[in-house]
Image 1: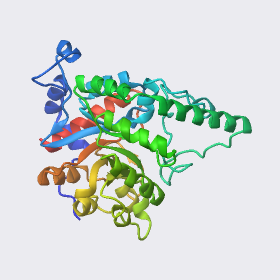
Image 2: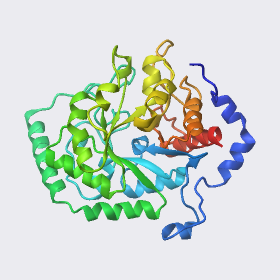
Image 3: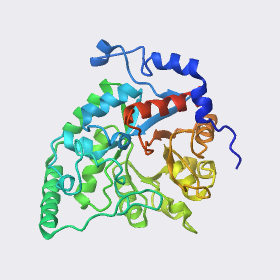
Length: 359
């Protein structure tokens, strides 16, 4: 499929007058305000041309974490809908501290260190991801993690859902919706999986996200259905494996939906992402947006600043806009951030990039 509208970084930055003017005006404004936003005069709004642009909060993994900071980053970038990483949520509510943070390098607010794989990624990451191999743990470290897992389970099962409703109100009062909570709970106990779906529902989310796999789908699909929620599955480079298809997963339960990573798909296959979106649009809940090189150039399948790679981001957004499909489009910031910038500034630039395509 030929790309119909590839917005280059040069063209994007070249529209300097428009971008400069846009940068002077907050991305986040609304006629109706309550609470703390009334004093600041701004409320995030990142729905452009009928397409909801959001972000997975993993994008801010290099920044201090926590619910208050996530709200701050959303306001600064204009993001009004998020896929929330569960560690920020549970840390805020007082979860036991994970001893892995001290074992494998410093992190902030319970966040993974910058450059580490997303939750659920295979140890060592995938080719082109650049993730280091996981270190072997000592018996003492293994015992510490076993105790943490038990303590965390007990904490989760004792936590009132009213705590999540309070956090939901914090986001709602700031003009931010949470459409997914990424708990990645497929390997948890059944009681903790129930907790994950109840917590996500209390947060106002439509579902819980996990990495795609046969066991995970068979485990989470029926449980999601029981809770009236969605089990949403994220892909890495599985489509580059011969014979891989969404079809066997989708028959497990109507509650099974996909978080289609257009960047990982294109970077590993070189195939236009719209071929998948057009076919499965009614089973795709959200799309992860990023720019990468493809598999046939050097460096292969490497994250790029938006507009400098080969992923047809504009085509993806315009297809969803044209068909008015209710698919969330979430920025996942994975390219290297230069010393003079930070993740908040880069996500804001990605929001502007998407806005210019859609409006």
